[in-house]
Image (cartoon, helix red, strand yellow):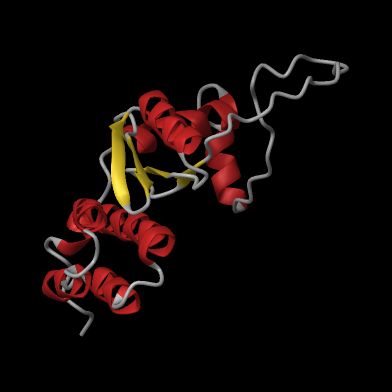
Length: 181
């Protein structure tokens, strides 16, 4: 898995791209010079990043076994799945961890990559250009994989926004699957 990169926008202009620390530093500098908060996006997911680091709250001393960073959650499987898992070396938890790690390292399937790119671009459109003319049509074109319509609808948008969205949306707009028959 590659490390995520980030991009910051201030007043509709791209002010920084790169690793999170560098982009947040540029965004904080822009905020200090102007009361309008810059928007910082994950280039992989389109998620907005906060300029304020999360506050660390002291954890209450726990009783019993140390947590070791493990989160217990419920998994619902069929009895045959539980039977198979319990027969695996290391038991159910170890087997599930190995399967999850292998899946996380595997390359994304083309359809999953298209969907991830479309979702990321849609999140950025909502934040940066949700009120722009053609925004709804651009989102429809994005999910339809219609490159020409997407570029036509975003052509009049500010250059930095348009170019960033074109980069994020590229996997969703290339070799889109044929519509179901």
